[in-house]
Structure formats: C-alpha cells, structure tokens
Length: 616
Image (cartoon, rainbow, N blue to C red; front, side, top):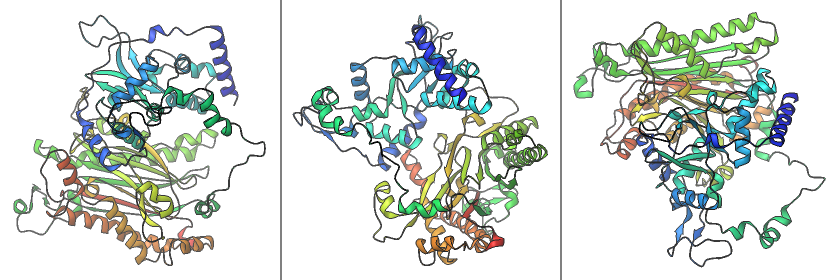
C-alpha cells in the first residue's frame, strides 16, 4: 500500500505543479499495416455472434433521445464503425498518441488529461515515408490497463514509486505486429464482437495505412444518442437522481445458489486425472506421407506413433511452499520441412523436451531455496516456451512448430496457458441452462445442465492454414510478415477451473476435424458411461459434499476419453462427406475443400476432481 500511496501522491504533485507538455506526443503520419490476414476473422465473427443491441435509428423516433442518422430505418449494430468515429471526433477531437520515450508518469497524465483509455505509441525519430516532412511513426499501442499492470508489476518486484513511474512506455507497449485493429467499413456488430472475444476495451481504426482514431466500448454505447439525452436537468431527474448514492446499510449479496456448493469447497485443492493419446497422419510411412488414400496404397492406416510430428510433455511438481503445479504442452511440427530434407519431428520434439527440462530444473532450484525468493522457481508457460525456444535455436535444430504450454495450479484452481499457432485448449463444464441460455442463444428443453464449452483458446494464423509458429532456419528472420514468431507473440491467458471440468489440450489434428460440440458430446458420454453424473449434476454435487469423488475411476478411465477423441478425429479426417471445421473455414476463405483434414493428432485430457485417489 505504501508504494501505491506514494505513486498517487507523486501524481497529485505532478498535476498540481506543472501542466504536461502534450505537443511532443503529436504525430500525423501513421504506420502502414497490412490487414488481409484478419479479414476472415471479422466475417466469421459477424455471423457467429448475435448483437446485444437491437435499438433502431429512425427519423423522428423519440427525438429527445435519438439523433437523425438518415431517413431509412437502420439497426445500430449494422452501422459502419466509421460513423461512430466521425461522431466522436465531431463532438471532441483528441489525438490519442504518446511518444515511446515517455515515462509511465507522463502516460498517466496524458490518459487523465485527454480522457483516454488507449493510445498509439509513436517514434518521433522515424518518418512514415522517406519524403515525409512530418516525424513520428506508429510502433505500438498501450492502454490504461497496461499502465495498471506496470504499476502492479512494480509493486510485486518491490520497486520504489520513482522506479515505477520513470519506466518508459516503449518497454511495455504492445508492438505494432501484435496490434489488432478494425477497418472503417466494418460494422459496429463486427467490431464489438471482435473486442468482446479478445477482451479489448479499445481498438484502433485503420484506413490506407493510417490510424484514423481509437474506438472504445463506450463510444459504441453512446453512438446515436442525442446530446440532450446525456445531459440537462430533465435527463438528470429521469435517469440519475433516483439512482445516485447507496444506503449506509448496503451490503454485498450472497453468492447465487448455483455457485454455493462450488464455493463451499473452494479452499480445497483440486486434483486432476490426466491422460494423453496420439495418432500419426493416417497415410504416413517411414518413407514419407501420402496425400490421400490412393497415394498411400492398399496398406493399413498408420499407427506408428514414432512417425508423429506432434510432440508433448507433462509433469507434476510440488513446490516447498505448498503449491502443486501440473505442467503440460503439445507441439505440432510443420510437415513441409520434409520437402527440404529436414525431419519435421526434430524441432517439435526438441521443443517439448526442453520445456520438460526447464520445469524440472526450475522446480529443483526452488526446492533447494528456503528463502522467500523460492517462488521465483514457478515459471509461467510463456517463460518456459521462451527459454525452450532459445535452447532449440542454440542447438541449431532446423524446423518449425506450433506450441501450447499450460500450467494448472491445483491450490488456486487456476489454469494458465500460452499458445502460438493453431493448437489450443478448451474447457468443458456443466453449465445450467437457465444461466447459459441467454449467453449461448438457446435453452435446452431439459432443465438438466449440459456439458458445454466454457472456454476456447484463441488461435493465431498469418492466413488460412498458415499458423504462427516457432521456427529456425539457421539464422534470425527479421521480416514482420514471416509466420515465425517468438514467445512474445503468444496468446497468454488464464481460466478459473471448477470441480467436474474437463480440459482438452490438443493439436490442430483434433480441432480441424471435430467440432467443439462433438468433443463435448464425446466427453459427456464418457461421463455417463463411468457414472460420474449418475442421478444428474446435483446428485454429483451431493456426493462431493460427502467426500465421494470417484477420482480413482477417473484415473483409470481417462485414457479412454483421450483415445476416443483421437479416434474420432481420424475417422472424421477420412470422411469426405462431413463438413469438418477445416472444410468450413476453407470455404469461408474461397478454397474448395470437402471432408476432413488428415493429420497427426495429439490430445491431452484432464478431468478435474476434489480428492486424491487414495481417499476415494
């Protein structure tokens, strides 16, 4: 608290003693950024998500709270985002830029003084074009959330207020290669859905290589409202006066009924039963890989897992301070290296081997340290991938691979992961239909909770079937448009895990061939077969309360679920009549493809329980 108080006092002192010089942050030229690779993402999102807004703009309709957009009735969600930006700039023009050499202190001042939640970061020493008279090139983006993270990180590291506030924006900004943006002709629906999916509060609008401005969730919410509806005496009396102020006896509500059983055991460590299954490309031999069954010949489909370009690792680690961590990862080697005389297995297998080695080494160091610094042995998935990638390059192993590494904290019930490319993680959970119906768009005729996807990790692709990947050719590639990326480009996130959840980590061999709903159905049938939900989900919760978890059964039967998912992926990959996730996405990108996508497939499945096997 002392450092937070010190930072706030320092900010008040800075604000009261001098006004910030904002002119040095201004720039007119913006960086030219390509955007072809995410256009399909916008198209997909616009059809998948339904709009939570349905209000319409119509000339003469409720004139005190609507602005006249045009004579035709329009749904606000279908209005182009350029109209929102135009209205925003008409009301108040603020240039949302800051210099990369600016300090955290100066960035906080700019955010407060300009009322910004995000800013484009510029380099004043670079010109956008050679003949440009104006200086300043866009090199990244930062948000108010980034500033809070910087302060929080400083507190955790024990830095002083001065140390935190004098760090430069360029050290923690999102680099331009990772900035997600929208285009002026895209609709509010498309932009809002993208921001929701990625957890963004601010997004830049890019046109012809220039950032035209930044749009926030608030900008979209206020669009179409007349200024008279936002201010004035009448608006205050109608909308605000009766809602202002909380009573002196106000308290927090009790958790809803559907969470109480979960929260009652929240302090108990979770236990996971885990299994892995893998299958090679069905047409793969030691000599190569056939493109189809005709090319493969009249032979049995391949089952030799030594031929797999996929790789994996898993390890459980108990730390001295009571932490119980489970690390796991999958990698998918890029098969096209075979055409250049390179074994595609070498890179992916070495990457996962080094991930395993790093976890073992860090946990060993932590156990040898008895001081408060022992927590430094707990490495994040991103750190593991970063160090493993450097080791693979140091050994000069040529090749490339996608990768996903996760860490499960059984004490805090938290799953952390870092993903690069088109492997990923999904979390399956029994979600009550009364709660999920509004979110998922429909309600089951049965009141019994169904197994649904509670979380699906974000995948990263340069273009269709061209995922981001770790790679090495013998030298560093500097080209921004290369699919070779680093750990700094990974999608990092975390998810709170509950008892009964089923977590599936897999390479694209699963996700390209089996729909998420089908994965959930296979997992549900596995649960029913092994009587984990006998009598329904509520009956299961009552068993948990009595200390009956069936985790001994889960430990014995979980390999069956992993193998079932692998087998279904292979079955679908060979079926030319199904609309697989791969073929659906191919058609959306104007590529004719029918059926599944034969490929290596690796699946790691985790079933979450409460008590260890010995107690069951």
